[in-house]
Image (tube, rainbow over all chains, first blue to last red; front, side, top):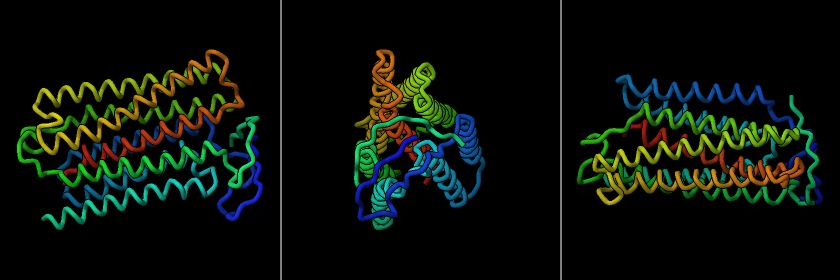
Length: 111
Length: 200
């Protein structure tokens, strides 16, 4: 059992609590991988029909975001670790999102 | 419910996390910004190439082929997490099997990318041809380089385990490599969707 020793912290809510690590078992990992494979297959299925652009885009983004969240939460164990790690990673993601928004605004300005 | 029975020496830190684990997450956050800027650049220049070929003009992606590549990388994330689970319960044989499986799948992905790149070059899409070629190859090339580094780390872990230098108490080392590997997979999820599937 991993028992991190916490000394002093100014952010007690962010620090991981000292409790057993409830990670998924091997079978759960396989189930999660099957879900990810199904989502990937769905993405390919959505690609081919001649659906309108915007709903297709929304579906693609939703599927990708779901896969992203599942890998981050279960395979990278973010769901089972404390909040601090999630905040650190989310900060990087948010800044990457800012770069995206700048790109989109620039595209519109150029158009 | 699976409780990882790991006897790990944990340094005393203010956050309760091993410093190396916190560092790895900070590094991955910086990698988010790195790949975010590369993807944003691709999207910014999409459809603005002057000279063909580019998607929609003399060139199209092979979606079924890339889908299989994506599936391979996704399954490598499964084998990686099974490797971590193995060392956390002290099963060194399973650890080595899953590490090798992850490295093999990673190499398969890289091989698939290499074949795809040569196919694109044969169709006239090169790094210097146009904006599409430049942005596409820089983005996917950097991703491929990250996968290659990941494979080298996996093989290093395998070698350490074979030499008996990766005990159960050092499972954090496998976890850190695993975090990097899963991140590489997650980046490909975004690349596959935004670059290959989405037609803007």
